[in-house]
Image (cartoon, rainbow, N blue to C red; front, side, top):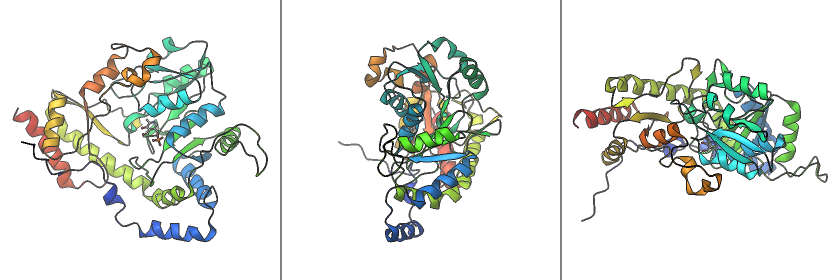
Length: 375
Ligand SMILES: Cc1ncc(COP(=O)(O)O)c(C=O)c1O
């Protein structure tokens, strides 16, 4: 007999709620049909200006995705075949894929319990071929940037921040994306600032990088007919820029609500010490909870229980990235990244988005509590 499918009581994806009333966005898209500037144009420029202001960076360049934001940043630094780029072992595949797409070799370094690259382990991964470091602000947490920037500065290595999960995050009151030479952001539908498809942004404070990125994302064209360098087609889509322009004003309230929801969970789960362990909550970081991820005893059983109870928990990421089949050419083995492997085995992600009701948050807490209290 087939098992009954549980009805969803707390959903993970909030997109139908977020976009149920989108008349304003649709009207803006209709108005766009008057000028028909479907590539680049005023909507993209407006988005770039607003995004730079939101982050507090001098320049923002809209591109096709967060993955492209990383790859083009590396290309702007002249990184390619024969080079190595260091990044975190626990990240979404896109970080490693972006490095690989430039022809450079991704070199992985283990993370700390707060999910970010361990600066103390970077030194031993350096070789004469190392050309850049990409810290990943995973889950909306921020990497420990001071020691990382100190090391990078000492070795003359540029830093590209993977801030794809971290719009609005801050480290010692400095915004994610503004501490390195480049900050790469994703506007993917499930990110905190989300559009209706793929899109990304790069921020930088240097005029020469801004110019280089604008060339790289548009075939290297400096005008209609002149190719200045070899580039690609990775322009921010105008329709996505229109969506982004309408959402920008909500970015801060979305972030605040996620932080408030996470604080509520943190307070409740403190009572489950021993069963639930919260990641370190460093006071110098404003984490923005793209994901609310915690350590759970008997994680797999809890995960199954939550799904059976209609709570759409997730696992980020069930297979440690360095051990994925597609990464075998990099030659990593079980045991190489103990903290990354521990996180794969023991972390669970709970819904934390801005559209959750207080009842839904309570239901998540009650269900997790019931799992441990009732065995
Ligand atoms: C850490 C990280 N880096 C890079 C990316 C790539 O972003 P995109 O999906 O927009 O290409 C993502 C997206 O999920 C991500 O989470």
